[in-house]
Image 1 (cartoon, one colour):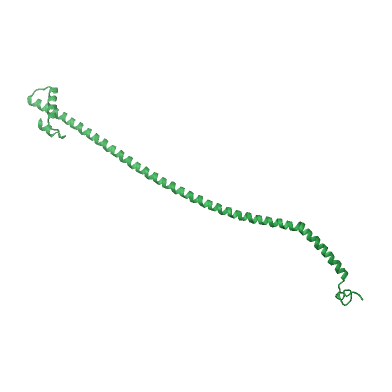
Image 2: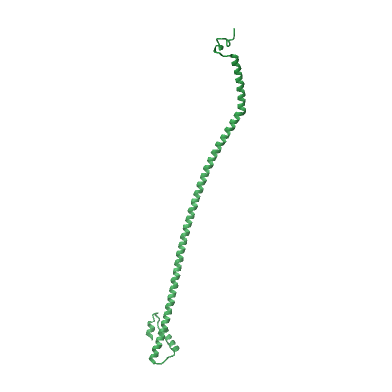
Length: 183
C-alpha cells in the first residue's frame, strides 16, 4: 500500500506533488532565514537610523518652536521696553520744552523790566534835564527882565549866583511854579 499522501485519493487527488511541495517549503524556509538575516543585518538598522533621524528632526522642530516662542517673547519685551523709553524721551522733551518756554518767558519779562527801568531812568534824566533847562531859561529871562527894569547890564555871574540861591531856597515841586513866583 502506498502512503496516504501519495495515494490518488489523498493529496495526490488534489494535484499536489508532495516531494515538490516539501522541496519548495524547504527552499521557502531557507529564503525566509536568509531574508530575515538580511533584514536584521541591513534593512532594520537602516530603518532604525531613519527612525532616529526622523525623531531628531521632530525634536529639532520642537526646539525651534520653543526658541521661536522665546524669541517672540523677547522681541515683545524689547518692543515694550522701546515704547517705554520712547515715552520717557517724549516726556523729557515735553519737560524740556516747557522749561525752555518758561525760561524764555522769564527772560522776556526780565528784559521788559530792564527796558522799562532804562526808559524810566531816561525819562527821569530827560525830566531833570528839562527842569535844569527851564531853570536856566528862567534865570536868563529873570536877568533880562531885571536888566530892562534897571536899564543897565548886571554881571551875569553874580546874577546867576543870586538866582541859583533863590531857586535852591525855594521848595522844588518839579514844575518850576514856585521858582516863577520867587522871581
